[in-house]
Length: 250
Image (cartoon, rainbow, N blue to C red; front, side, top):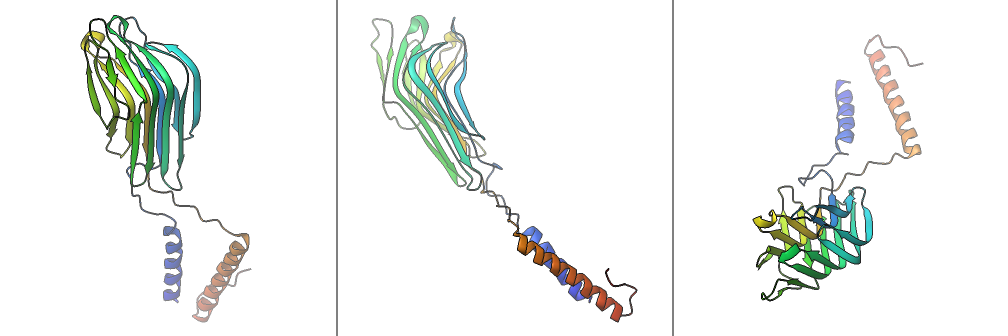
């Protein structure tokens, strides 16, 4: 009798523990973030918070038609998009703008076209890319303009006289495996407050696929309930044969 009861208990425990799976990623669920522009304040130019933004969860697309704020000016549509799926542990992010102008005050200006940052993550890692179709930084005479490379390799750094440096296709991964991609990152000189200007930001991280919760069929549940009653009656019957004090179920 004791052997039968222990076997039943072990079976129930096995059913309960089988619905939970081990975690294989640092994140507990996939995440993503995207925005098109942001800037610290410098000179008489105000800071620009991340604009427009999209974050997963819940994900979706955020757009803004035209922008004149801080150092930025554009008539193009700025688009930020994120998405994800906890059942597969994947996420994605993108930020795009067709053209945008950047004003550095008396020290120069920049024009960028075809800015695009993307990021795609799975439970095993994330990949991304930050590109521009073209870019030019115009400096005060007699300095020549600086041409920015299209489709630059990761973390391409270019020194800009009187302004600082620009990093193209900037990429970094944190301890949780979350990848950050900035298509264009201007880091200004201390004379310009060491401000950071980012155009095209995409960030994403994957996670272990979520374990699906088993659906219980009504007929299966009914049969399971009947089997439970039968097991209970069987135990009562065995105990009565063994001289126990148990009474039959009503």
